[in-house]
Image (cartoon, rainbow, N blue to C red; front, side):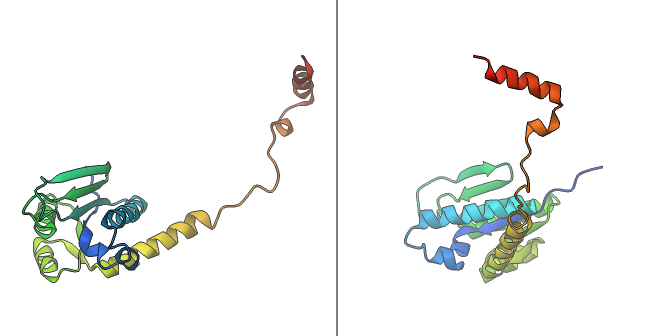
Length: 176
């Protein structure tokens, strides 16, 4: 039986940065905004068990396309000279859908959303996805951090040993 591929999220990086409140504030430091976005998405992708691809424009640079594999399920792509994030995302979404993956594209770009829907992928406006991320983070905190309980009593080895063994260990401890 063939295993169903993981759901894939393709995120228009700068579109998201320009619409999420905590990232908009970092517009003067784009590198920090990218790092924060990547951190938030790595956490979300791991929690939900999604493959995540974040695409950033490098349209007006002379750089070649650059891909960074953050972990086996998270990739960051910087498009090459002359290619927009939109065109890269559309092509990637189309390819993944044809391979049988369930693809979700995060962008608020209306034209790109139309192309994505035509390719058979799902679309999520950036601000709607922000709400989804925040809800998942809240669930993560509640599920893992709220239930931490400290032990009521100490768990010592001595409580699990018989008297003879305790006496021998005590004698060894007192030897010089």
